[in-house]
Each structure stands twice: as structure tokens, then as C-alpha cells.
Length: 256
Image (cartoon, rainbow, N blue to C red; front, top):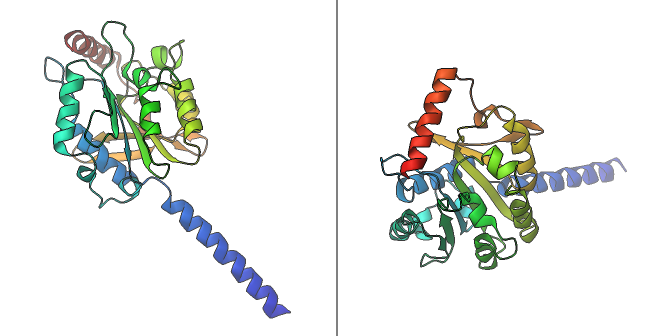
């Protein structure tokens, strides 16, 4: 009797371990994600007229291995030539909808005429957006990465009628159970500590990461449990530094 109970206990533990390992294997690897975002920075990132990095958004569908294995190579599914073509297209103010030979990428810059943000352009209209087009062309087992150079701005992307939440909800509904990740790099100029609550809301729909680089690109999940990760939040800055950054952002926007 004891032997039977012990055997059952061991079987249950093994099953639990198997499920845990499978779950871990199905998670995005921050190091693999960092490698992908570095590739975008080096090959797709558009510039303003004064040579600084410009806001843009890009989404790509790739085999899961590119999101979980640091040794994988994105060039195999999105070549440097394709990346250059996408960069040239969005620099001209056009939107890429499956414009690469691999037909696995959408990308855009903000619309300077309508003031529509790049994230919104890719996510709307729901059901017929560039992202919907990408998802219809995507294997359910793929990993879909949506990257925005700047974090979603609170006033336009989160707190107004143009907020991106319905678009993110649509994405999650189309790919329930799929590997999806929303990534941003730089914090938008008006971001304050209160944005933590908005990041929690985004993360409930799609896992939210921040990737930023000094000498080495680093990515971290923006939410740990029910708490926002300080890595993704603005630091306390002096008033002078805040206005300097705001002025520079206004100049870059004007010249972009």
C-alpha cells in the first residue's frame, strides 16, 4: 500500500515538473528578445532630419525559436535587405503591410498630417488593421512581436478616444494561447510614475517588455505579479532636465 501511494506521489510530481518545464519553454526569453530588438535598432530604426532616432512601430511574425532561443538568427526570416527596404519605406512616410519578401512584417511611422500615432495605425481599424492582416498570414505556433520605439503615450494612446487597448484586446482574441509580446524602448516624454497602472492594464492583454541599451541591449518584463517593474518606469528627474528633454522632443518632432 505504501509503495502504491509513493508511486502515485512520484507520478504526480513528475507530471507537475513536466508542465512547469513546458510552461518555462513556452515563455519569451529576454535575451532572445534583446537580440531581435538590437537587430531592429541596427537595421530598421528611422532617423529624424537632425539624425536622431525617430518614433516608429513594427510587428513581426517569427518562429517561436526566435523568441526563446538566444542562438537563433532573425536574418533567416527577415534579411538585412528586407529590413533596409522597410526602413526606406517608412522613412518616406508610407506604411509597410507585409511589404517584405517574407511577408511577415508590418511597420509605420506616425502620420504627421492626422497626428495618428504609429501604434494606432498598425492596430486599427479592428478586424481590418495591418496587424489583422499580419495575423491572418501567421502560423498559430509563431511568436508575434510588436515593438514601438517610444512607450505608448498616456494622453493620446491610453487616455483618449484613440487609445490602443481595443486594438491590443483584438490581438489577444485573435491569438488566444499564442506567443505574443508588446515591447517598447524609450519612455515617452510625458511619462510619469502613474503610467505603472496603464502598463499593468496592457500586460493583462499582452505581455509587456521594455528593451533598452547603453552598451548592451537588455530586456525585462514590465510586470512582476501585480507590480510594475521599475526598469520600465521613469526615473525621478530635475525640472530643468525634464524641460530640456521635452524641448528636444519637440524639435525632433518638428524636424521629423
